[in-house]
Image (cartoon, rainbow, N blue to C red; front, side, top):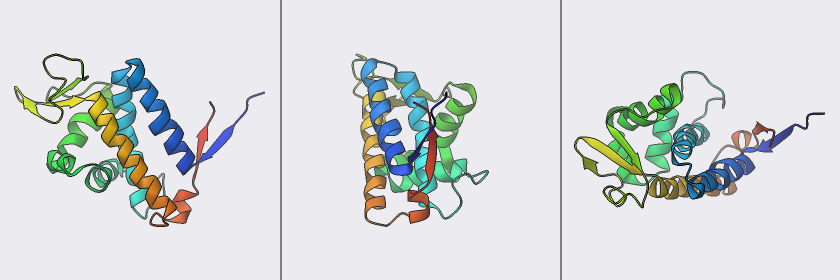
Length: 164
């Protein structure tokens, strides 16, 4: 018999976006962690608008809401004209690869591991551990907003289907 679980939004964000993504980063599954975080930002952004959670054609707006309102301000500047959305989130979602204007790396990379959010040879460098730290803080900011009643109760009480 298959056991089905539904998690409330707060538990889903904690379990999947913070805990499981952190384990991916720690275990060295960096590419998969970036995929989850890019998609996760869009999911976080859907809590910031008044549309239903599964409203169609909201990806770009919701990703941008999360970048602009939850992530550190330096990301908003990089997302001018939806650049981060196009080169990171959309590219990872549709091709499982980033655009040629983005370079994904990790802290122990001797050449680029200390250059998070910097450009080199026309490429934006994203260091997975630094990106995760900012993503985690964004999740925590959203969870705090839910606790304080800033996020609509209808969305906070949304259930996410989860089978693990």
